[in-house]
Image 1: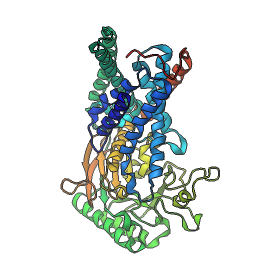
Image 2 (image 1 turned 180 degrees about the vertical axis):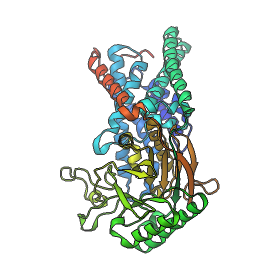
Image 3 (image 1 turned 120 degrees about the vertical axis):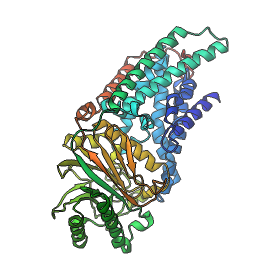
Image 4 (image 1 turned 45 degrees about the vertical axis):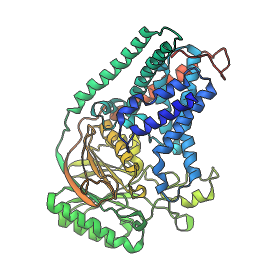
Length: 521
């Protein structure tokens, strides 16, 4: 029962560390109960305890998912079990390597954790880099700067390292209190010193980078948030009213702040712009009237909505409208939502018929389009594309010096989901040393600096969710691309390689893996 208590303790503590509760400091000790619980356990027991911790954490982290009416409890459990299995493998890996070598968890825990996080983020259509441990540190300015070198995985590594050092100290103290042994305090001191040195280096780099300003010329960017309820968004009778809502907000922003670019959110227009001449003419007139470029999300069907006849496919797009009358280019979403915008490998895997009916049947775009707006190259991530570091990195490699994330988070209401998406967006800015602008139908429309500072949000009083409004700020183009922008997930790949090498090199335990020798902790 004490092992189960440790697993549940870790799940609860980590839940508090993430957006929604935003107690990021808790993450630095949150894994300690689980590390103590799995110490000395056999493979099966260690897997089960870590799996339980992951299951409880992810089901709490994703509890908002029931705001999507098409989602069922059985699918929620499947999602939780899939994500928790990575935690289970981490626990089993600690058991195997600890028993094989007798070395403390501080050696194995960080590379195992990061290697499994990276695999989860690269798992094809099952890839979901949501709820990565490092994301809990999005509000901690000096710590999050490490992402400019390692991506978010480096933060996960350091947080696990500190947890492992803490757990070693707690285990040693507890053993001494119970009179089992005198306690190997010199070893605890060495482990603590090593973890402290790593953390000190991270903080030193972070404080130095936090003070750096963005380079380049400024572009005044406005975001407009229409706050269209999801139940009304795709009603044909509401199409004109919704377009006028965004046009009115654009005029308000233009009159007050004269932005050079106004960003409309994902599917602000519920019709494909290229096939709607009346809407196109209205947008051209609006761009001329305001003197602003318009970056407009458009699609003619919703996610989680079956295509007519089951075969018609469309793009989820963003289009640029120039005040000089030019239309285009257009960016078509590259990374679609599996089971929401398409049914993955449908010709091979026998998915339930309901899943096929719910898939929106969108087509994926093939180009990482960069828009040129008044001399500033702009790259776009639509909706959950901002989850994936490589997507934004490719845009920066293609020349983008400003990232824009257009999204519709009306699906999720006033839950933790929009805050979690905002946290992930912070890392895309830091990783690439570029500002990032978020424009949501409703959600959190915000401006993020290259160092991850959230500079402003669309608000009504104290609320930043489920409110209409607009906000304009001057955005300085991003500076020199970071190590991460140039080289990508080198740190995660090296860590994954170390994890595999350690597993292969570890000698097999000579005793039963069911009970296993007790690991020194």
